[in-house]
Image (cartoon, rainbow, N blue to C red; front, side, top):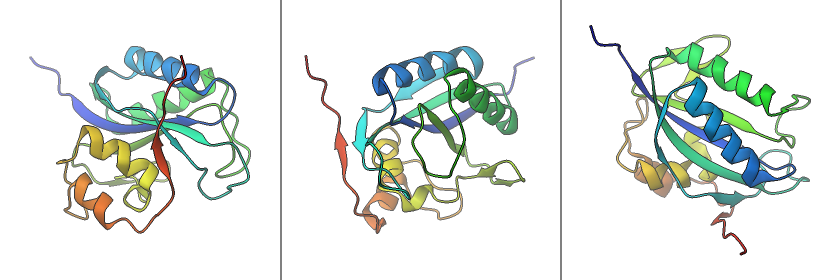
Length: 167
């Protein structure tokens, strides 16, 4: 009997402390607690969204394959955020790590704790740029457009720059 799996598209990011370390730790914990990491985008530096008087974020898109159903995968992500010191005070404020579930294949779901696909992903360049890098042809299950098409249509003009490591 084969176990059913789901491919998940995530966006991880943070803007406090050692941002690269938090991204690496989040990836490692996601591999342990959610499932196999199939693909990762480059790392992008982006301005904060919503409340902009805070440090820039580093963001990265990840695709995982997991036997967990969507709500359990999201619960695991919230647990990882807690493990990495995430404190929830105000919406859109700085954080050590943020793990957002963007897609669960082509599933559509709306519960009090989880909406799939992510309801604002198609409006945000900082989400679409890394997603279009690793999954340009993935079709949004509601808008019926690829990630590359959504990026071209996106009205958000905020800067999303490839993060360059200084060695």
